[in-house]
Length: 196
Figure 1 (tube, rainbow, N blue to C red):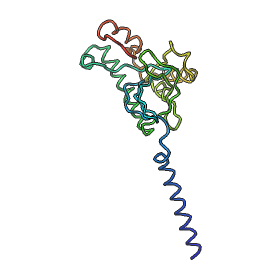
Figure 2: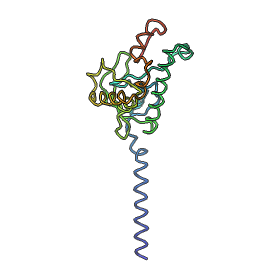
Figure 3: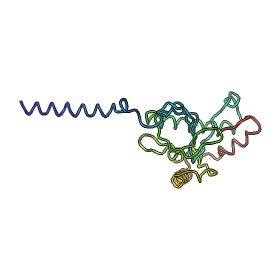
Figure 4: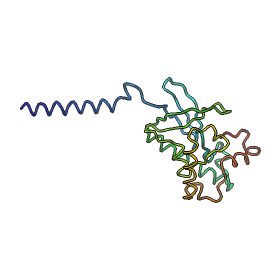
């Protein structure tokens, strides 16, 4: 009888510990910043633990563009359709990664851009480096003009080289225009203000 009582007590204790660990976020707050919206393949709208809301532009990379206006959504131009199709894939993949992480990310802010966004390296709760995933899958390219402000520049360059060698994502598409080149093509014509 005593042996059975000890087993029950041990089992109940173990169960309580597991339940306690699972609900830690409820008592101590969730780790990381809450992602409120995935704006595109390299931009998030987040809220920190203090309730401050801000936009985060990914350091080190540039993802294909998504349409910003009804006119762009309705465009039949091949270059637009190609850019926006890849942009939608990058955005969907980023949404998937963020959801896997319970809508929480950890940021290493490296800078601010001219639009007031924080520029940051972004990691999921388990430490996965989001920029590296997007680059490895060919859903973003290394953004070399700002690479000197990228703490993980060797890692991102290696990830991009791997995707390029395996012809993954945009690297498989000979008609793909780099996002920074695409923005410069449309800057003067169809959009008054082009944000990356």
